[in-house]
Amino acid sequence: MMATAIVSESSPSRSGSIVELDNVTKEYQQGSLRVQALRGLSFQVEPGEFAAICGPSGSGKTTALNLIGALDQPTSGRVMLEGRDLSTMSRRELSHIRRDRIGFVFQAYNLLPVLTAYENAELVLALQGVDLDERRRRVMKLLADVGLEGMESRRPSELSGGQQQRVAIARAIAADPAVVLADEPTANVDSETACRLLDIMEKLNVDHGVTFIFSTHDPQVFERARRVIRVVDGRIESDVRQAGSAPSPAPSGDTGPTK
Image (cartoon, rainbow, N blue to C red; front, side, top):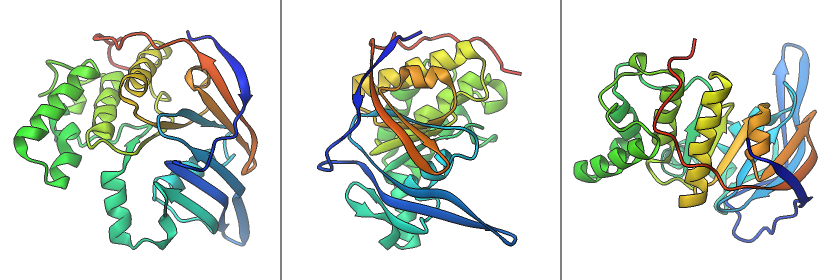
């Protein structure tokens, strides 16, 4: 397990930010009750960060991730991706942003059950119209990078939970997105498999500069993250940068199916 130490309170520069939230609020109507999920959230994420948004259930961390991922719109404030205000974009533009510039890793994997590991990882590239030979080159390398070489033709039902999440990670980074958003990516696997998944994501971050933002309450993720943004009641309680050792090499094995 990685040892971490607090280095300093985070105060990143606005210049060159991949993600910026500027005084963002989000309200929902639940019957006659008006719920304030976010209350003036502001932070920036720079290229190459490995950051975690944490907090108790209902704190607003998943809401924040949904806004960054262009899956929802803020009630007020601005959400910027690579300098572009997402609220000014059309539905078509947002669809292209999600396809081309944002990678998603979900708690429940969200793989298409009728597709193989290879086909699931290839899907975004196919939607982009990438040449067949180039798609094969990229996908085969990615599946090998996440430890799934030789499992390309297996469907999700033939893979363990950890293996399915590896396919999801490969799918998320296949199109070389600006940022990967991982919503509770270790929640449905055992602790040993979670450690191996984090090894893979951290190695992708260190070796290839892939930017990750997690929404999580998993202590293993806090310990690995080099920045932890704690959200409570829709507000930032703390934003701390951490230091840790380099990740271990991505493993080729797995602990087997997760019940």
